[in-house]
Length: 306
Ligand code: HMG
Ligand code: MG
Picture (cartoon, protein in one colour):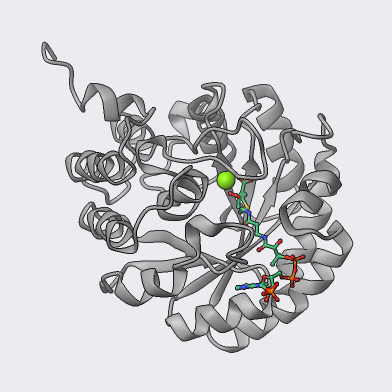
């Protein structure tokens, strides 16, 4: 079936700028400014926001204030807050913060995983037993990330079957959804189709999300493939803010404004007010003190003549 007969009426956008965006800023943004960004994101109608990480402050000092961010972020009915959580200590912090969701993360390639969390893939999966099951028992939803699926900054090509094996284990432990990460933004559409064909042969479409960094400008093209394949959740970062501190050269996720502009233009609803989202992108640029790479962020919703 052609894409244009199969477009969904709506999709879910999962915003990662306060986490994936800010973790990669050279300068640590003060807590009050992070909260201002989260407020602006909430005002745009976004319903799923990853607000921080509960990881080691030695590893990601930019997000060392995660507890304060969570305590001061505005709580709005219908908006679910999430945070990265690598271990039991992270889960304790998430429970104290009273957020709705945590996200565990692991790589499909050994070298990236070791550089990111100082463990093998096998030990990381075993360690999640102190996070995923206990979090679900405490009433939290748990999302899983599988990184470097499209390519690893240290190992090059990655076997997506290894990513699928890891994803199935995360689902078995209790994750409700696995976000497939093109951590360094190397993916192209035919590769994306091959990866999704593999995953969707064994996982339900609602169990799969796409997390595309836009390093080489192919994120939206890959997302169109995702739409066609039946994926209905897309991660994005306002203004294109971000990267990964343990993936050298990685740029931010697809800019949320670019994603929403494209989806709305195709008649796919998101529940997000694009003008308000553009304002949130301005807040993001102001709090980090530099221009961001997003296309709609730079050009506006319509050109002057449009
Ligand atoms: P480690 O050094 O191997 O283990 O770190 P550790 O247990 O010895 O911990 C080191 C210190 O951190 C200790 O403190 C712990 O108490 C403390 P010390 O005794 O030395 O004073 N610690 C913590 N503190 C607060 N909260 C915690 C916590 N855990 C330990 N939860 C560890 C192992 C996993 C902790 C570390 O490697 C880590 O935090 N890594 C996080 C790396 C990270 O956040 N990377 C970026 C996110 S992943 C990403 O961006 C990809 C993604 O976007 C998807 C994609 O793009 O593909 C998700
Ligand atoms: Mg990422």
